Structures are given as C-alpha cells and as structure tokens.
Length: 253
Image (tube, rainbow, N blue to C red; front, side, top):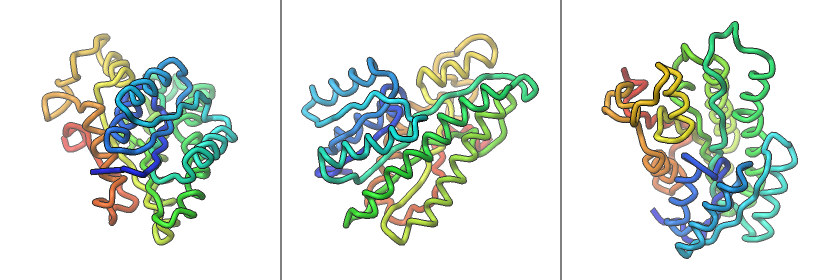
C-alpha cells in the first residue's frame, strides 16, 4: 500500500496503536499530523518520523475540548491543503471494577475521551474530506469489548460499543459522498494500556497475555496498524461501516 501525496491525521499518536499507525502511514509515504495530550511522547514520534525522512506535524492537545480538533484540522489544511485519512485512536481503559463501584466521575472521564472526543474529531475531519475530490477515510478504534460484554468494566465496554454505533451511523450518512468510515476492534494489543488491563486479571501482567488468546499471544500494535492502513486504502473501497476484528481470536472463543 502506498499513501504518497496523502495526508493522514492520527489521534492518540504518542503511544500504542496510534504511534504504530502514524509510523506506518509515514513509512507508506503519507504526511502525518500527530495529536495527543502526551507532549513528550508526541515529540518522540514526530522526531522518529522526521529522522526516517518522513513529514510530520505534532499537536499536543486535549481532545475533550470541542475546539481543539477543529483547530488541528485547520492547521493541517493550512500546511498541506488537504486531509485524506484520519484515525481516531485516542482512548482510556477506564477502571476495572463492578458496575456498582463505578461513579459519575469515572463515567464522564471514560466517555469524554473514548466517545465525545471522537465525535468532536469526526465533525472536524469530515468537511475537508467532503471537499476533497478523492474523498477520504476515517478509521475509529473500538475494541473487542465493543463487540462483547465485559465482566471488568461496564463503562469502558459501553463506550466502545458506542464507537461502533457512531461509526456505522456516520458511514451510512457519508458513504455516497466519498467518505468511508470504519472501525477496528482490537483486543489485548501489546501496548502499555493493554498490559495495565491484563494486570487487573490476577495481579500480574503475563508477557503478551498469551493465556487469554486462541492464537497463543496477543496482537502487536503494528499488526493493528496494518489493518488500519488497509481500511484506509483503495483496496478497501467497498468497506463501509465495517467493524474489523483483529484480536488474536479473543472474540471467536
């Protein structure tokens, strides 16, 4: 897959799936806009891409602020005059506990980052794609927990189910106008966030979480990034409203 001449915007780009996806887009020739609230991690990714000869622009920001996503997209258009691809990977895992132990503060924090921020981002990303003669592609990161229930975090699971609903509804609205919108549903990816989740299962974080997956290991962030790039490519031209599961067999069991 090549994305030469294309511009991609990635949220949650400082680590994990977002970082791997940003680097993959840059390796495929795209100019990449990087969004995250982790300024240190964001700068490291920006330098990594630039050191490899790629073009990157970092925005340290809080996406729960409704004006932030629009300001970032405006800056991207000013810099490159287009936006072809967007990947909304920013998210938090919430807290592992029973429903009765969850509270309004936890609910608000999880939903604000996992859903409301994504909603703000999509509302900023879609207009320049509608104006693009070649249209555009948006990939939202849901989760295996967006396809099945979770014994450990009802609010997190609810937020990720909602991501799929948002993705499919928007996909129906904009597909004929050239903007394809899809979701990816990973589970237990080898990232710092996933290791924190695995650690809550029994008080330890087994290497790769292999005991939980039919494949015998969890997925890598780079494997998830490969699926994201495919969904963003012309090869996935008829993928509309898809929830692509890449989870080492977790939801197949």
